[in-house]
Image (cartoon, rainbow, N blue to C red; front, side):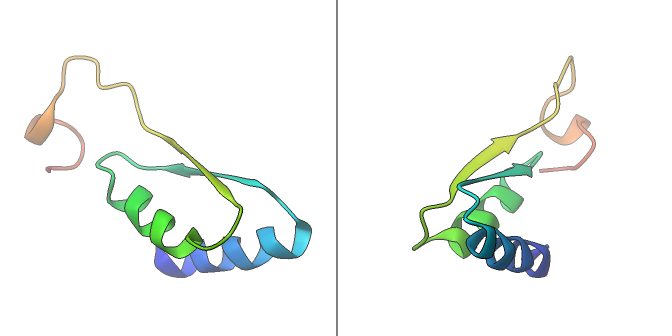
Length: 63
């Protein structure tokens, strides 16, 4: 995951892209992306799935 974000960061800076979208169910990917994008003007947009009636350990990925 970190390598993908580093590549996206490099390309976004080359193309002057100001926003990057990251999918994160638990927040771990979002935090990784935040740390990698820190120090740039790139804004991070984080989306997740709709939890419906599943919360916590009953979801797709145990927390």
